[in-house]
Image (cartoon, rainbow, N blue to C red; front, side, top):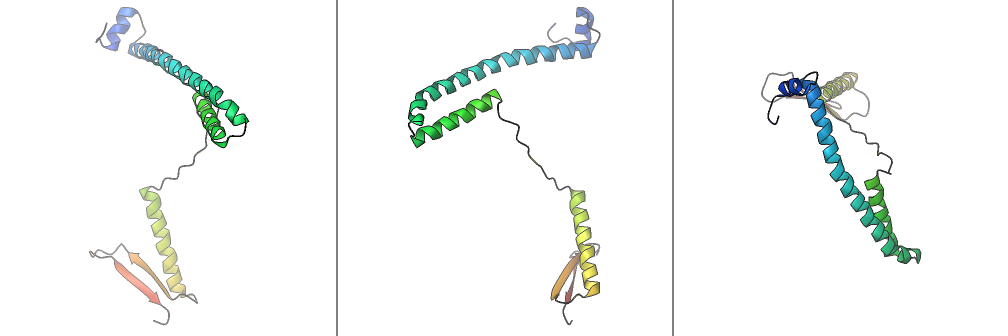
Length: 145
């Protein structure tokens, strides 16, 4: 059946349709790939256990290098076995729209400051990107100007 489209395999094998064949193939591939990974993981855990046995006495006697190595091996073992709690990560994404909105708000606030001419403002400026000229117009407000 190698190379046949999924709908033909479904017809010959007795599945309901092509999607059922696709799901069966995916399950079989996932299971086949899982076995080698489990074997490698078990081997790595066993290696960690051997390293811990070799280092343990020195660590219990207070040798700092051995203690450091023991902790590193224990961390690796915990990773392999999935013992560590998931790490929560925050991702902040600035989109073009978000950045454009920020720029608009900043320009508006600056224009409001210029109009109010608050005390203590020596120099403030904004770039007018709505200007059709090649170089954007820069307007400045200087104290006393």
